Length: 274
Length: 85
Image 1: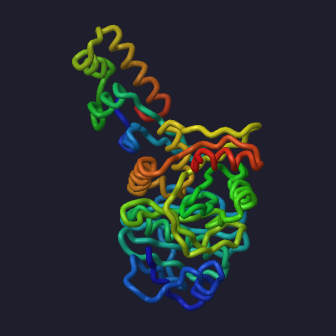
Image 2: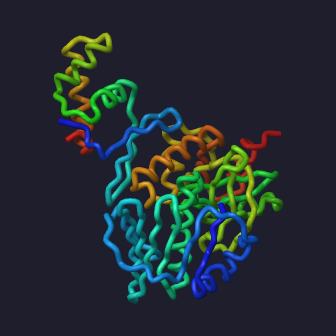
């Protein structure tokens, strides 16, 4: 997906940052424009979901007719407003908080991408033998730990993204893309790969691989896609179509595991039997 | 009673599911083929327990007593989840 970013101050804060630089491209036909630094006025909308961003900003996501709205209100009084017209562009109000702007752009990319089957997946992702392995799971289950262990056990295993890579169809099949959103790990690689497996990580006092039922696969993948978007019926349909397709195309496994090398070898043996 | 139109039955990877989302939690309801049949026949309509049971006796090899018990179980469960009102 290619988007055009406009706006001087906002561009300096985003496109000028290390996270975005690897993803800059020559001007070409793009899917949408994200206009930063706009004077977007306050507008009423029907709230679909409210949540906190990094304990510092209250976020509200909602819809009014053909427009999605996203508002962030910081505890120190700074705010950000975003509006996306379905099938069209995104406007973002002027905001001096770099982290809020960074998150708002993540929201903008997901809003533009969702109807195109392109969404962020909350995961840590490594590349090994020309394909990717995505580790999913709730916060604190050890997704990043599994990525780190893979690199320790197999030095050729490379981290693609540690928090929010994107999934998108490429030549008829889903692939995973590096992104400017990688959590606390500054790993911003403009690369994409086919996917060996999507692996749900569950902490356990042992290492074991199982193949979940389709219902369990849905329960693993769906909560890893942007939760706010699933509150809208139209977006929810796009997301569920995507989940259906992912389950049809890509092996989904559950890894009950300890944070040790045995977990790496159990998964390695399953994916690459000798 | 009727199925709340804000809920949608989805076919995801061959599973028939309804997403139930509120402020506190997200839940996923999985429907078996009979429950899917009742949903498809009754969505968008006002209906009674007898009408739901009648759909079962008309389409499945089941007696009135069993059909009524099955239909009641279906409506009770969906009612408890706030899907049937």
